[in-house]
Length: 552
Image 1 (spheres, rainbow, N blue to C red):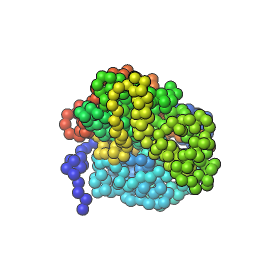
Image 2: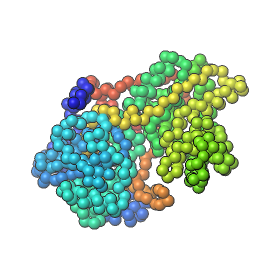
Image 3: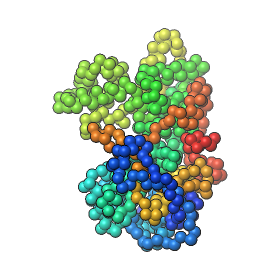
Image 4: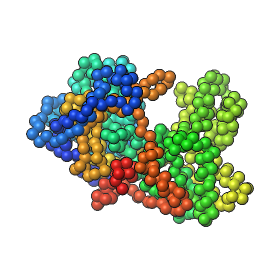
C-alpha cells in the first residue's frame, strides 16, 4: 500500500484559486479581439496554417446565466520533461469539463504523444484525479518526447480518438509540444475532422512566454527549489569560508532559471548565456572575468563564493559553437574509423584534424572535457552538449588562470572548488501555491476553450502578479507564437523561444547589482517553499515576473 506524507495529505485538501471568469464554470462569455498574425515569417506561417492562422485572441468573462453544455469526451497528453503542476492542469481540466456536463469523460493517453498514436490510455475518474491533486510529477499518466509531425501519426490520432468518441485533445507541453499541437489542429481542421486541439504552456526553463502567456508553469516551483539549495550552499560557503561553489542550473536554450535564481539569492557570479552571445565573449574572457572576481574577494580575505552557470552556456560561446560544429562533421565523416579507436586516440585524432583555430580551442579545454566531446555522442553522431560538465570545466580553467595570476603577482589567495548540477531536483517538486493555482486555472480554462468550440489555441491566464481574484482568463492562437527555423536541413514552423532580453527589466536589475554582489557577501537565503501561512510568504511570484510586469 502506498504511504503518503503528512504534507501530501495536507496538500490534497488545498483548493486552488481560479480567475473570476471561471467562477461559475467553464461556460463563459467569449470576447474576441482583432485577428492575429505570427511573431515572424508571417507569409510562410500563413501558408502552412491555412485554416487556423489569423484567429482572434480571446478574453473570457463569467456568465452566471449560462446553461450547461452537452456531455463530451476529451483526451489529455503530458508531453516532454516533467514540470511541477502538471497534475493540477489535468485536475482543472477534469473539474472544468464536469462543470459543462457531469457526464463528460476524460481519457489520459499514456507515456506522452506515443500513447495517442499507439492507442494506450486510461480513463481519468474522480478517484484517480483526487489522488494526484496538488502533487508534483507526471506519474498519473506519464510523459514522453515523441513528436507529432507526420500525417501517419495524425491519422492514427484521429482513429484512436474516434473509437473513444473524443472530440477534443489537450496537449500539455513546451514549445515543441505546442508546435505539434498546432500542426495537429491544422490537420484536423483542414480535413474537416471534428476534433479540437488545445495547448497548455509547460516548461521549467521559462522560455515559453509572451504578452499573453506570462509564465510557463513549473518555472516558479523549480526556481524556488534551486534557490533554496543555492541559499543553503551560500550559507555553507559563508560559514566554512574555504570553497568556491560552481553551480550549473537547467536551461539549455535560455538562461531564465539562472537569472531568476540569481535575483532570489544574490550570488557572487551569475553567467547569462544570452549576454555571452550578444557580446561574443570567448571562453577565455569568461574565465578571466570569474578569476578577477575570485582574486578581488581573496584580496579582501574572502576565499569563497558562489557562481551560477546556465546549462546551455557552452553553446553560446562563439568559438565553442564553431568547435562543436567542426567536431560533428569530423566525427561523422570518419565514423567507422573513429568508432574503432580507443577513447584517448579519438582525442588525439580530433586535435590533429580540426582547423587550426578550433584545434587551439580544443587543446585549451581540460582533458576530461576533451574526452567528453569526442566520446559522448548521440545516435546521429553529434556531440551531446547537455552532458558536458561546464561547471567542472570552468572551475578547472579558473584554477589554471589563478595559478598564472599568482605567478604574475596579481593574486594571492586559496582556491578550492565544489561543483554541483541542479536539474532533476526541481522538475517534480510539489507545486508552489502559485503553480498549483496557475496550473489548475490553465486546465480549467482549457475546458472553457473547448466549450467555446475553439481549436489551435493555447490556454492563457494573465495578470498573475495580482491575486487570483484579478487574473484574466482567455486564449491565444498558437500560430501567433510561430516563426520558421532551420531544423535538420529543413525549414520548420516552430514556436519562437523566449530568451532572456538584455534590455528587459529582470536582466537590467541584475546587471545594476552584480558588481555589488560580486565583491560583497550579500547572499539571500530563500528557504524552502512555504505552503501554509501568511499570503506574503505563501503566494509569492517570481522576481522575473514581478520585474517584467512592473511590480517591485
